[in-house]
Length: 119
Length: 111
Picture 1 (tube, rainbow over the protein chains, first blue to last red):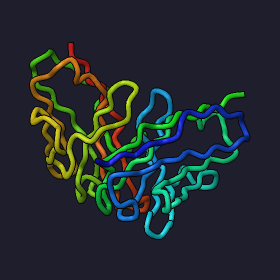
Picture 2 (cartoon, chains in turn cyan, brown; picture 1 turned 135 degrees about the horizontal axis):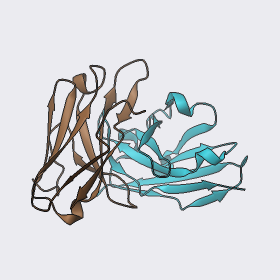
Picture 3 (cartoon, chains in turn green, cyan; picture 1 turned 90 degrees about the vertical axis):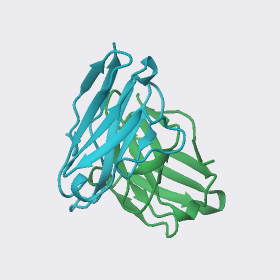
């Protein structure tokens, strides 16, 4: 069965960096893109972008250019989200979510990683 | 401001049926498949409906989806207290800002 297991919660100070991991199993990792979705406290889902797991090419939504980086380690079927120069407004739950099909919304989701940015 | 528009909340009694609407445009719902997700409190979203009206394995047939033009609807019949959750629609947007778009979410209360 498809599983996406994310790394644990993080507490960071403003200006620091964080790297969230998402380990996939139960399917061929390089056959489906991986999406990243942010959910701020009490808010809805916000698509951050996706990474082509075959080529490693990332695509970022407009609001997530500059400080956000998607990467892969295909040898361990893992996708990563790195956020640099953290701000208080980056406090949110971050989800990885497997592509269902080309140009489609995701099907399977990770359990989420809470990133808290506070001094 | 979400690209797709959902009502903030809906409510109904146990056993009743409720519908949740999702309105978009020709660049998203009008030309792409719609998915629906259920997010129980404190958990990750779970796929309920895909390709407008298909249910993944394990999703009861109490959940249904439909699409007409640039709008989609999620139906939940035989409401149970365990259905209390946030529900999101999602689809692909083929405009200049290509990518996945979600509705703002609808909080379902089972009275």
